[in-house]
Length: 392
Image (cartoon, rainbow, N blue to C red):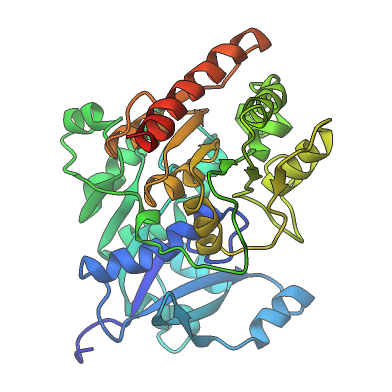
């Protein structure tokens, strides 16, 4: 690293241990993407910060006493991580008046960040999940704009936007960004109309390699991701839209049981010891598995796996049906035939950006009467992508 090069890369929404293995996959992929594109140079380090108010709170005190810098092997590459604890008063002084003391943690932080890279959850640069979640994505972006630090929007879905105020803010951010990467073309027309320059590329999870672990997968198996978001039918602005989802999952399992296939239920967003209620695939997976009257050849992957290990399991399936977008990406980027049960337009765009057409079905507000048609679509995909190809 040259003497004039700033030391730190700040990545928003970066967490390799996230409950959502899709979010974690974005973190793994972000590191590889930043290196490949030349944004992260040799000697530069990842930095993250936490704002605290009371240093004597047990949780805060333990963080203050933790090691602030450590190097880890991430998919064969050493990466150094730095963690900065910032006093709320010190942060507010900077946020309101632009004052940062160079000898204090925040002052040192402000002066040494070379780049802000925004993940935004892969699909969070939108208000489809509500204004509160939108605002939660912005601190690192606002830091970049306030300090005139280079900003890139890492590959993600842009839009849609319901609120004109949020749309205006999003446009301002994209105009400031040095580079806007998108993983699909669903919002391309709107971006073109706004005059936003962008580059279409793969989702970040494509850059994360699968990691094997001690499991024997039966040949010709079917993988199904039962989403806690849809199964609970009680998640934020999407609540109440998935009353028929449990029945759809049951019929889907029964469909492949009749073919004599082994079916793996593969959670993709879950806190094994700390679940997020109404949005946890392990909870929904267990409930769904226990609800099955016939469990023949059905296996629940009930383990606390890291994201690359989940991708490994999915990579061994002969066919995969997912409701989580990044569970589907794990199949797509390991060349497993896939069908997506979609709850947003991002699915179709993401599939089509990877050359996969007519392999999604919307499941918002479906009724039991719609289930046979969806099963028929899945069966047709299975016949075309698995059976016919196998038979040559």
